[in-house]
Length: 59
Image (cartoon, rainbow, N blue to C red; front, side):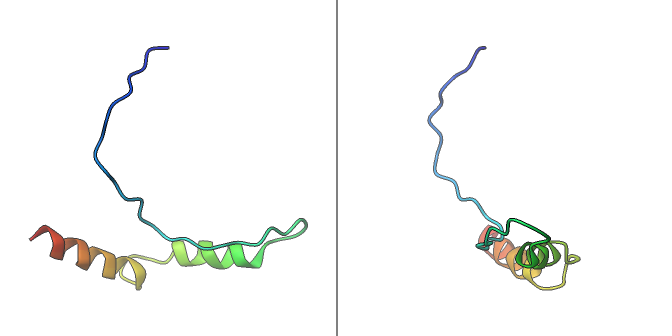
């Protein structure tokens, strides 16, 4: 396998984050609630504010 190690500038990971407790059996209600929040349609809250702030930084 051929590979290279490159020096790159700093970067930031963005997205939603939530601590989900481990449940051994059955569905995990916390995970279900998190995926429901991620699956919300665009413009329903969390995406629209991020888009506005990104647009403000690009000006």
